[in-house]
Amino acid sequence: MQNPLDSKLPHVGTTIFSVMSRLANETGAINLSQGFPSFEPPDALLERFEYYLRHGANQYAPMPGVPALLQAIADKTLRTQGRSLDSATELTVSTGATEGLFSAITALVRPGDEVILLDPAYDAYEPAIDLSGGRAVHVPLAIENDEFVVDWQPVADAISARTRAIVLNFPHNPTGAVIDRDGLETLAGLLRDTAVYVVSDEVYEHIVFDDGRHHSVLSHDELWERSIVISSFGKTFHATGWKVGYAAAPAALTNEFRKVHQFTTFAVNTPAQCALADYVESDPEFYLALSSFYQQKRDLFCKLLEPSRLRLRPSRSTFFQVADYSEISEQADVDVARLWTTEHGVATIPLSVFCETPFSGCRLRFCFAKDDETLARAAAILSEL
Ligand code: PMP
Ligand code: GLN
Image (cartoon, rainbow, N blue to C red; front, side, top):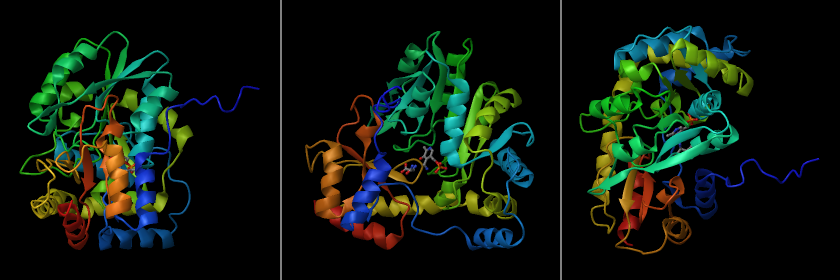
């Protein structure tokens, strides 16, 4: 028998989100690390979930998803991105975006393939590439005036005959970077004569600030043909614990996606799907107002941090704010994150864990999806440092 310690994922430990949240809980620190809201889903959505629990929605859902939810997602996508999706053949409900990403990457990547990731890259992508026998090729974002932006030349340089896919994540976790129409055009041009697929993680699709809008891969005809777009209701409805997401892709790609999905999870929580189906249709105001809701949080948090020695550019999207702490400490971000949690009582996420090479410098990510009082308490501590 092969040694069971011959790990298929030798470089993977416990995720930074688990590590920092556990440390925050153990020490009683204010937890601005792992990204989850401190507020509840809307009442009307909770009411629908309770209703379906009591009205027979407790057995397996169909493998691709509850038809009413698939239709609700198709309607939302038409409304927000102008793409008309066939809910029967181009959409699949997944167990959160995490399962969607895993199924998408596993469906596409074969041994020897390369997959381009833009660093800092969310930590769920590379293990799925590795398990498929592929190799992640990390291309750092550029930093301009304290902001992370895509520099397309190194992306172009990284594309080769071995490239199977590129993973995009806009609105971007952890930096809040966004992609605009020109960015989509540039990418489409780079991929035009290649066989490269796009896996586009768009879980923060409804959180974009300063009158910006989210430019989804779904909105671009040429990119759409080669894309699997992943999203999640966790961020959109303050329901990260429900783990309901979805994948949109042209029928042939959806077919491949479902081959993996059906053996990864088969079907997703039925009452949650039924509840979301009703709520997505009945209350579009909620997700349409989400950007302004979080923009107020961002503005408050940035204002509260003005007296601090943290240097920051207000985030353009998501519910994360990145700040440079180099005026406070020269220590590595991983050590600073740990120290500030245990000694000062504020937990954050160090950016370097998302990067192959630690180009991101002295930067931490703060989650501002918290009630105002929590943000004020955290900022008061940070302003003393
Ligand atoms: N992608 C990104 C960029 C995320 O921040 C997260 C975490 N919310 C996920 C995927 C996973 O989403 P879910 O909780 O729906 O699995
Ligand atoms: N996406 C969340 C974040 O970025 C964490 C999700 C998780 O803990 N797996 O903080």
